[in-house]
Length: 237
Image (cartoon, rainbow, N blue to C red; front, side, top):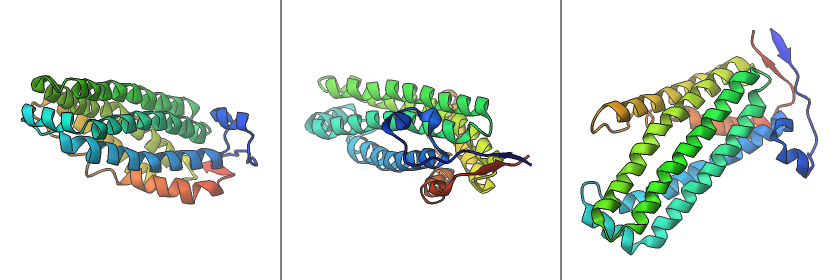
């Protein structure tokens, strides 16, 4: 067994907080856990409460009327999703710092995969902006709203790669129970399967990630409950 010791730190000054490569395991865990928890709430409200109810599949006129009559709600959803992108980047930094002692190269690849996903997600959200300003043209509104979903699900394949790598790192870490690594890897596989289906099968509906997301929720509780007690961690050989 190879043991990796991460030096614990006391309350870090502001400049240390900004330099994520110097975060302690405890700080990285808390930041990742809080960001993921906030992200889950904001993304859920923005997408499923603010945006989805206003998009009527197959009915361009009804969609344009709904979006046009509820522009503030739709815009709030867009802003919420853009905020999620910032949280994604924060989580990428925290995961990198936490798992760099396990495998710095894979940790960096995982972090960059999440950043690339965030950029793709930004492209998807831009389609919602198009939908918002195109209500005078119902066909354009529905097409843009549909493009948002198609692009989002497609780039979730990159997010799936991120989760596969994080799951592997968690499995090998020695300081996170291996079941969490397995669950994260399964969630990643679900996103990848949905992305492949969206890109290759006409009319495909994303279904796999909806059944395999348990690991994403479970790791939030671990990060918030167990993570703050991290000071020394070991990796399995």
